[in-house]
Image (cartoon, rainbow over all chains, first blue to last red):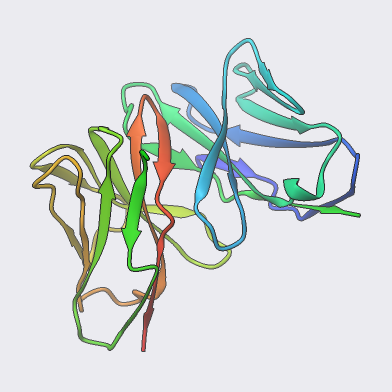
Length: 111
Length: 110
């Protein structure tokens, strides 16, 4: 089993749709969680950290479920500019400098 | 402006040659990382450094070497021993688990 698993997609949605991605992780000692966004042929960029209580940033909402060992990202009112690959990233307790990267979920928002 | 720079953006190399990729940061971060990304694949960690004059192998260090003589700089050398060097190379710095990336170098071996 991979340490971090994501549905690769692609997810094809119309503008204005709500879309959700899930990511599961295998190590229960995982401590920190992040969502990154990567545009085609560009570097990944931090989208948001995921906190235990859940957090929201505009149209983006991240949730953490420690019991089931997954995190989620919800995008409301999708824009064309949201088209990208979304990477789930996990940091294990006691290993604060090394991140475990998922392979990413591809999103295409269509007009 | 604070940030991470990588150079060159595109690099072509003949088989059997060593090549060094540059990574510079002015974010004052202690930790720096080198990743490689192949088409349709996730990021794989090559080397990382938590402090000046110290670095550790990542998951795919064979055929690569690094140095960390200054806090701002973490160059990566791709040696002729690396069997499949053609890839997108990304340098990153980190703070409290979050990482910030440079624009990357696309290396092609001819």
